Figure (cartoon, rainbow, N blue to C red):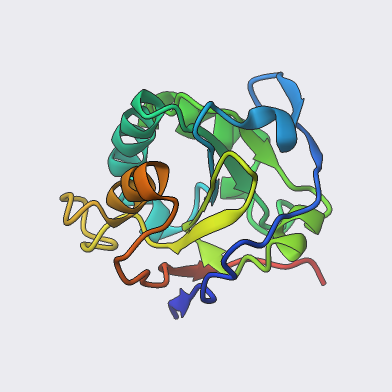
Length: 181
């Protein structure tokens, strides 16, 4: 059953955290920012909502990079219960989906809890001051593989230019985070 993400807690600044990406890069949340911010997303390999929009995620993160916005993906599901979300399957996902951003596993689920992540996919944009300015869906077509109105991109573009987004932010819809017992 699909679940919605929570509403955006505008201007929230998360605590810094360290991560080791599946690609072998060690970094921190604070050091992941581009000149105009960071898109942090909770995704996984087994969720049909994520699988159906992988190409949109890939193309939109490239477009955002052209605006000076880096991207970081976090997989927070319980890997013991969901083998499709194993490291090897996530590495395969990176290759087949042509993801060009660090992809890390939140093994103890502390990052997801800190961000109050609800579902996959879920998208968070932080401006250069590390303040949350967007939380919601990628585009107006949701699970449809065809790109709809690029709500995330448009919001980020406006935030970079004006400091805020005037458009309504719609929650993301997807599979719930698979919490450990």
